[in-house]
Length: 128
Image 1: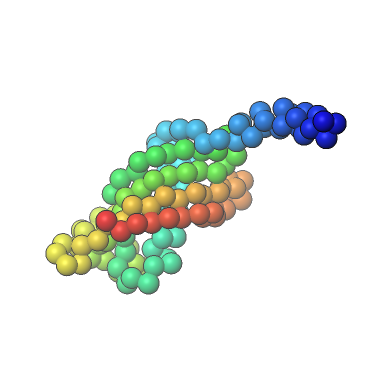
Image 2: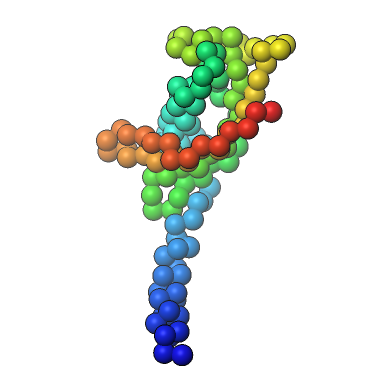
């Protein structure tokens, strides 16, 4: 019984701290979130073996972990006719026919705005 009391007190003390670090919705139009999305798409293209670039089509969930600069986002991207290192991929048309591919991704991005540093902490993508 005596061992259970400190455990219970610890849970009571730490319980509220665990809850404050949950993800909450943020506006997709905030500057920091928009830059995180752009960075996540860029990083996706960098690590893909595919020679063609993917561009952003849609942003779903947009969240930030409370009291941090960690963002969570769901995005849909489409494969373009441009190569990954071409300029202006945003205005590049999507591939049609057999080359047509779309992916749904969830990214978690950590930002250190005072250093202009971005890190993809986690990414999960599924091809449609």
